[in-house]
Amino acid sequence: MSGKLEGKVALVTGGNSGIGLATAKRFVAEGAYVFITGRRPAELDAAEKVIGGNVTSVQGDVAKLADLDRLFAQIKREKGKLDIVFANAGIAELSPLAEITEEHYDRTFDINVKGLLFTVQKALPLIPDGGSIILNASIVASKGNPASSVYSATKAAVRSFARTWTMDLKERKIRVNAISPGPINTPAYDRLAQSGPAGRQMLESIVNRVPMGRLGIPDEIARAAVFLASDDSTFVTGTELFVDGGTAQV
Picture (cartoon, rainbow, N blue to C red):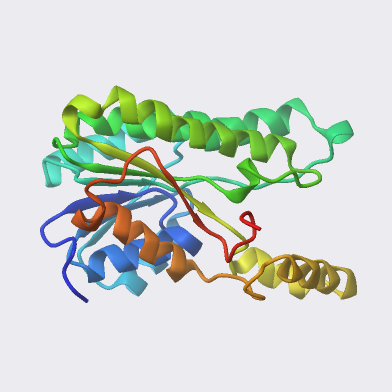
């Protein structure tokens, strides 16, 4: 690795699996010290072992403000600063319009919007001028997919945050950008492939809509996150970086 993040301190929420874990690994490989969060202690312990060093896991739920306060108090105590925030934690639960419940709506917005907003807000006192904030959005903010209206709305809010927070933080030269992944090969897609003929047919349909003809892998998102976290992107802010194999582009 090239050491693009040497000496930096980073936070990856939802860093115990999938895109978050891949990004935490990349950040460490590029020289950063990384804090990861997640709700499940066993997965966090396993993620720490996979990353192998220069990492601290902190169990917590981003939708619970007390958990966030505890997280940032620990980061302040142990490192005193936070150069990079990758607000990645989120859920993707689908429901057709006629079947949306208040519980589904509240849970999705609490984690994907409220949790992300207060993660960034509570991190601000630790972020030095010139820091980098990266928000994990999704191509669903730009595409109309069935049964995804609540999830898509949360990701549209995340995209909007990147624009508005760029203006809120411009005096401090803190860059705020969004990454919008397309279909990424995570355990959810493995479960879909193993669920039977209908699941495999749905997976094939998803792949067929990707111009590059395949699912992405978490490390491809991680490499984009390294770009936005590093000095390679010092004149990039307020943008949405699609990493989607062309799915939302053509």
